[in-house]
Amino acid sequence: MRTRKFGEVWNSADLFYSDYTSMGIPTTISETNCKTLFYLLYARFASSHFANENEIQAKLKVFSTIFKYGPAWAKRLEIQTALNALELDDLREGTKQIANHANNPNTAPSTSALEELEYIDEQNAVNYKKSKVDAYASLWNMIATDVTEEFLNKFTKIFMFVSDEEDIYLYKEEV
Image (tube, rainbow, N blue to C red; front, side, top):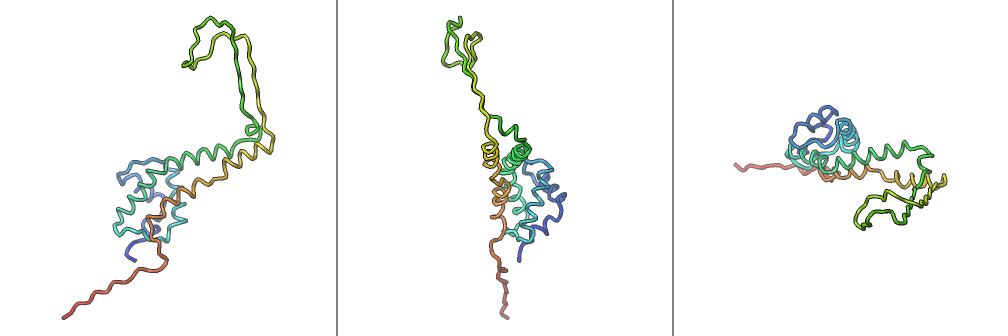
């Protein structure tokens, strides 16, 4: 093959992070997420050859992919972690609706203002509580999507798609 493999270019998370912070593309994910991403990429692409012969261009493609999609992946991971940490009581807590009514509140009405009236003479409140099954179903729907797989798929086009070796070029010189 005419290009090196991912695992030959980067054989440690520290080396990957060092290149990530020094290649000129602004960093958009934390050091921890970058090193985690290295291990995820290594697990998938360690034996994959880069599609570009120019290794610097291949590295820049990796880091530009992180620049474009890394922040969303990192935020989704953060949200997924928070969702996984929720307790059943948190999941069962439902929406709260409060409706206020005021007769002659002594203020001019406005349809464009979002401020609440200072005076009210009637209030209705409704609190919803989900069943255990509904609470777990809501959590299941929120965490069912694997955010990392979608992100890792963005890197696939940077590597060769063939499973066979490239043709060997032989040059013949006539005397």
